[in-house]
Image (cartoon, rainbow, N blue to C red):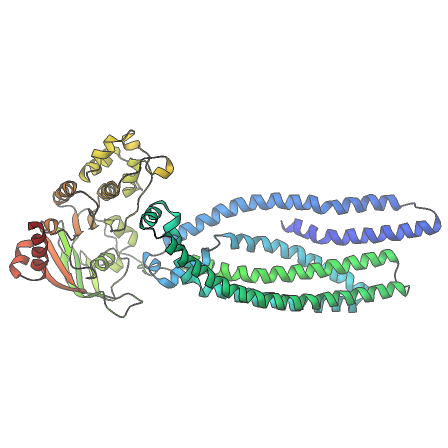
Length: 567
C-alpha cells in the first residue's frame, strides 16, 4: 500500500510533464512542418495517464485483503478486552460514557485512521515532488498558493475538535437513546411495548434526544460552513494569483505554451495535494480523538488489583468463609451499602440471606465474588485474605446465578454445559443437572431432546421464562462448584418445581456450600444458617428456630408472609 501510494503521488507530475512536452512538440511541429518524435511521447503519455486506474485497482485489492484481516482481528481484540475488563468497571457511568464514545461507529474509525495513513503518504509525496518543481519555476507562485491554503486546514482541525466534544458531552444521552431503542428493536421488549401501547411515548423521547443533538450539531455546522467558505475563497484567490503570475511569464515569452500547461497542471496538483494532505490530517484529528478513546478502552486497567504472588488454595473441599468487620460503599456514593459485617459461612452449610430490597444482599454477594474489594475490613477464605488469592482460581470454585442471568440460544445440552465450558461436555452430568433443576421433564418432550436448538430467532424452540430459569439453574448445578450462590433463583418457576428444586439443593452433599437469597421464607427456613440484613447492617443470625424465638426482624417478615398464605 505504501509503495502504491508513492507511485500514485508521482504519476500526475509525470503525466503533466509528458502533456507539456507533447503540446510543445505539436506547436514546434506545426511551425517546422515535421512531427517526428511526437508519437512516442503520445503513446507514453497515454500509458502514464492510464496507470492511475491500474494502481487504483491494485490498491483496492490490497486494501480489501488488509481490511478483511484487520476487521476480524480488531473486532476480536475489542471483544476480548470487553470480556477481560472488571465487572465493576461496567457499573461505572463514566466508563459507560467511554464505551458510548468509543463504539458509536463500531471499529470503523480505526480502519479510517489506517487507510488515511496511505492517503497522507500519497498526498505528501505529491506535495514534495510538486514543491520541488514549483519552486524551480517560480518560488513566489508556490508561496502564494501554499500560504493561502493553510487557513482551511486550521479551520478543519478546530471544528473537528468541536464536533468530537459535542459527541463526548452527549454520551450519557446517547446511551439513553441506545437503551430506548432496545424497547423497539428487540423482540421481547417490543412485545411489551406494543401491549402497553407505549411506542409513541418512546419515539417521542428518542425524537427529543435526536433533535437536541441535531440542534447543537447544526449550529456548529453553520459556523463551519461560514468559516470554510471564507478560507476556501482565500485559497481560490491565492491559486488565481499564482496562475496569473504563470500566465504573465508565458505572455512575456519566458516559457513555451506547453510549459505553461505543465506549470499550471503542476500548480493544480500541488494545490490539490496540499488541500488533500491538510484535509486528511484534519480528518485524522477527529478520528484520532475517537481512536484515542479506543486506546483508552484497550488500556483500561483492572479495578481489582491481583496479588503479584497469589496464594494457591488448590481446594478439594469446601472452604470456611469469614467476613471480618467488612464495610463497603460504591465509588459514586457517600452512603455505605454494607457496614461492619462480621460473620462466618460454615463449610457445607445451606445458608440463607434475607432482608428488604436495598438491604445490601447483592452487594454482599459481589464482595464474596470479589467483583469489588471491601472499603474496610477483610474477607478470609480458610484464614487467607481473599485479596491474596488469584481471581481465576477463586472463581473456579464458585457457581453464581444472579436475578438477571444470561440465556444461551445453543443446543439444550450446550446451554447447560456452558456452566463448565473449559471441560468437554459430559451428557450424563448434563442430564443429572437437568433433573435437579426440573428441566429434564420439558427437554424430554422436545423433538430433539438435548440436541434441541433453542431460540425462535435461530429456528429453534423458544423456552418459557420459567423454563429458561430452570435451564439456568441446571447450568449452575452442572458447574459442580464448591460454593453455590443463588439470588432469587426460582422467581419464574412454578410452586411444585420450586419445592423440588430446593429439596434437591438442600440434599446437596456437604462438599457444597449453598448461599441462597430469597424472599420465600418457606425455603429460607430450611437453611442451616440465616443472616438478616437491614440498611447494610447485619442485625440477626441463627437458624429458623433460633430467629423465631428472638421475635425480631426475621420473625416479623416470616409471620407477614405466613399471614398472607393463611388468607
